[in-house]
Amino acid sequence: MIRHSLLLLALLICRSLPAKAQTAQFLPEVDAYYKVNPYTQIYFQAKETREGGVPTQAEFGPSVQFYLKPWLKLKDATIFDLNEAKRRALALAVGYRYLPSPNAPPTNRLRLDLTCHFSMWAKILIWDRNRADLDWQSGTFKWRYRNRLTVEKRLTINSYHPDPFVSAEFFYESQYSKWSTTALYAGCSFPIGKSVQFQPYYEHQNNTGKHPNQTLNQVGLILELFF
Image (cartoon, rainbow, N blue to C red; front, side, top):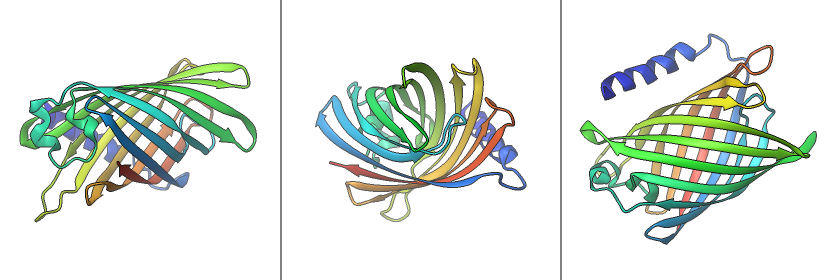
C-alpha cells in the first residue's frame, strides 16, 4: 500500500508540471522551535506565502504544540530528525498568525493543526496533517481546511543525513464551498549541526476558486532553528 502511495504522489507531481510556468515565485520562511518540556514545544513562524488564490502575503506568529510520549515504532525513522514532534504519534498545535496586506485590511488567523506520524518499511516516515485556518478580516469571517500527506525517507551519506520528501495537500475553502486548491511539493531537509536545518522545496499549486484558474510554480527555502 505504501509503495502504491509513493507511486501515486510521484505521478501527481509529474502530471502537474506545466510546459510553461504561468507564475513563478520564491517564498522564504523562518521557523524557530523551543522545547518547553517532554510534551510541549513552542515555535514562531515568519514567512511569505501565496495560497488559496490570494495575492502574496507575509505571515507571522507563534504556535504552541502538544504531543504524546515518543512512539517506539518511530525511533528508527526519526533518529536523526531535529524536530521533536516527529517522534510522536500525535501532535496538536494551536497558533495565531498575522497576515498584513499592502492593498487590503490585515487578516487575523487562528490556526489549528493535528498531525499523525507513523513509519513503514525501510524507515520511511509518513505524516498526515489536518489543519484549519480560521480567518477574520475587517469583520468578515472565513475558514479553510487543509489536508497534507507527506512521505519522507532520511538518508545516510557517510555521517550526513539529508531527508528528501514528497507531499500532496488539498484545500477546502469556505468562500468557494468546494475543494479549490491542490498543492504538490518535493524537497529535502539538510541539517547543519544539532540546531539548524535548511529545507529547499518546489511547490506546484493549482487554484480553481476564481476564474480563470491560477497555476503557481513556487520555490521555497525554510530555515529551521531548534533551541
